[in-house]
Length: 316
Length: 289
Ligand SMILES: Nc1ncnc2c1ncn2[C@@H]1O[C@H](COP(=O)(O)OP(=O)(O)OP(=O)(O)O)[C@@H](O)[C@H]1O
Ligand SMILES: [Mg+2]
Image (cartoon, rainbow over all chains, first blue to last red; front, top):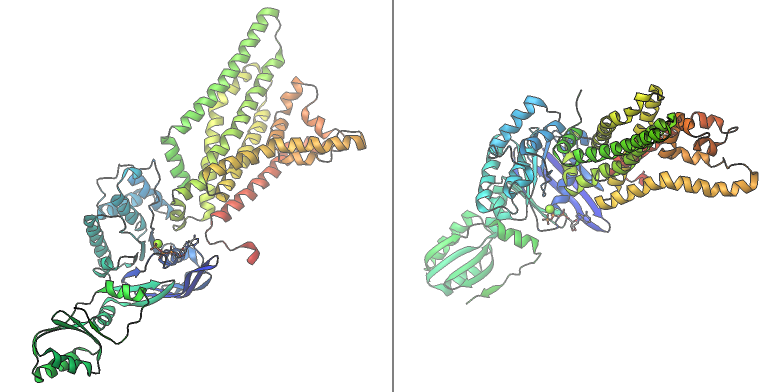
């Protein structure tokens, strides 16, 4: 659906994007994550035709988006990281203004905008002035506005910033609706935890480069491998440690209270074999499981560029 | 016909706001006040001397038209200087640009909304100017010429305002610069011409005509050309002829309004072109090719 290759953008001397690659599947809900200043907004501006990259390719549905920006306009809905509202304009008029910017007028425009306002829960506010809406309502209005021309791809730049938990929840519900309508959604955020619940795909961007990209399952698997194995030993800890230290898949061993935490690179079968080995050696265990994979920790890990050595750490 | 969405939105908002009625009310009351005072002074003169000076009716027309012209010059920059920069400040420009609207659509929508306000102003003030019709002496052709001058002035000032608005990020700066630019165009060219002419007088002994072409960009001079007919009734020789002289630049003087309108329209087109380029986020730098 959306393919970006080697995107580069310099602001003066500083590179905002440094060869960014991105692949968004059709129908995906793509979480575009990165710390502040990673280049998310810059990428999105290029995607929406508001910025010209210095280098790189952008393809949308197999067509060169940079060569034909006018052709992309109908395919993309854009929810920016600001509101962009006019004062002195009512909600319904605001929607109709943007409808007419896409060539929709009259009854079609009115019906479409009422439908969308209903979808985002603003149907009772049509006669309010736009600048009198609360932040959350403005956000939802912006979403409705971006959908006015029924785009294939919806691109949202930090749409949930500054929303209360309840509005966030509602926002996610709206996103689920959109998924059911088979729209492709790209949503940028610096909060991974928020995206991990709803996204199907994740791309983690860091200093203008994509550092990790893939489907949620793929990434979670990777994370699971990376997350530690927790072994609670009831009796025979030293024996267990001896086995673990000489095990080929064990990278690091950390002792935390009565538990042993392992960085274990094997898969589930190897885990079973290890468990068997420990039992056979007469170690009495009362717990043996993987910690749940946590995207947040991966994110921190990826974005903090630290290499961990193979060490034995006592944390008592 | 499709109405430009930007234009439609602007007119909707301006119809709702207090500004438009205020502008129309204040302009027309000023105009009416001047007209009535002029009439009053005429009437008192008639009472005193029992002599009706026909030319004073015409001077009423000239005076009214001049006031309206001055109001145009004052109002149009205020109407347009915030057009693009205001959209930038509200961050709505980027939203419009992600729709089917092209930069040219946006700029033209802004221009249209300015011109329609001016149109409203001129039309609403016509009854006052038409006072003079009661006495005759002003023909339909004069009115058409006056409207041409008003129209091209509004177009030029509006385009300059929009251009400044697109070049400068802040509305206040854009407003200041567009007033200055207009002042340069109206007063600056006059001053410069006088300055250069003062040298030429010593050389050739005649009124300097070499730099008169500079005044072609001056909307005020076009306005003088447009009301030339009435002016010559009141004063023997028009200012314009004083400047252009009779013999060599006679052609220029005769077709002054047409030529200067063409020049000013071209200047407006240039301003609009710059504005469209500035609005386009995807413009490549010219010198990079
Ligand atoms: N107009 C600009 N002029 C100069 N530098 C800019 C400009 N816009 C962005 N940058 C720089 O480009 C880099 C990427 O910025 P960008 O806005 O894309 O980050 P982001 O990922 O959206 O961050 P955030 O999470 O804070 O929104 C930053 O280092 C920023 O300083
Ligand atoms: Mg951003």
